[in-house]
Image 1 (cartoon, rainbow, N blue to C red):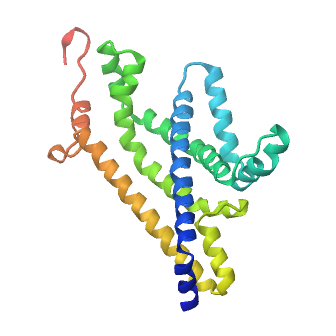
Image 2 (tube, helix red, strand yellow):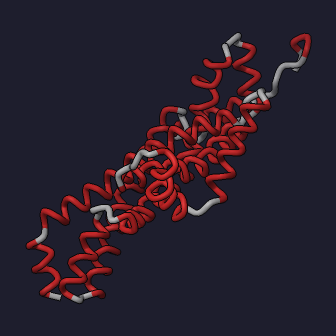
Image 3 (cartoon, rainbow, N blue to C red):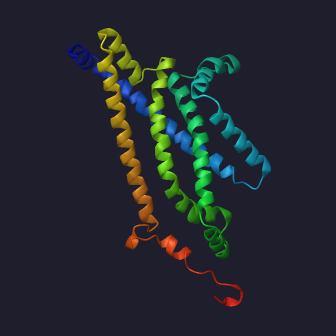
Length: 244
């Protein structure tokens, strides 16, 4: 065990660089996944059949194929097809973004569909355009419901970053594996990896929980222990002629 940690200290610059690659792949992959989640999720609710069909096809394809194969296809097969070769880290970012963006689109679609119909009708009654209805009324309410599911997807994406080792990327997994090969201490090496990934996942969870509390506070969900939106939706809707 002492040999492993002494080697770890000697190779600390490489460990720090590997950790940065892991964080970079997580952050960039999650940003791409978030962008695709909203693009595909909103397209799934389009009135145009072609737009809905394209969204459904992309989502089902990337949800229905293995992330391993997507990584290998981008790194080994795509250069033969297009003549362009991506770096291992870029392959990881693209594969993570496409795969988890497909899952995230279902989160977006479900959250938008769960917003009470009365909210849509109220926005229409206020003569708001479709864009302003979505931006000012629907998405703020749906966003609160998306965050817990997005948190789970973000943690899953982080835990998939060791797959970059298969592409010879210089991530944390690759660096620890190299130290493990030099010292022969598998138990310590993999316990160290478990601890580091746990700390990273826990830090991301705390950040997402903070984001969720902030989003709820903006909607007044902590005011008096009741949701203002629920209180408003509980009021009886006026009937024709103004009678209740």
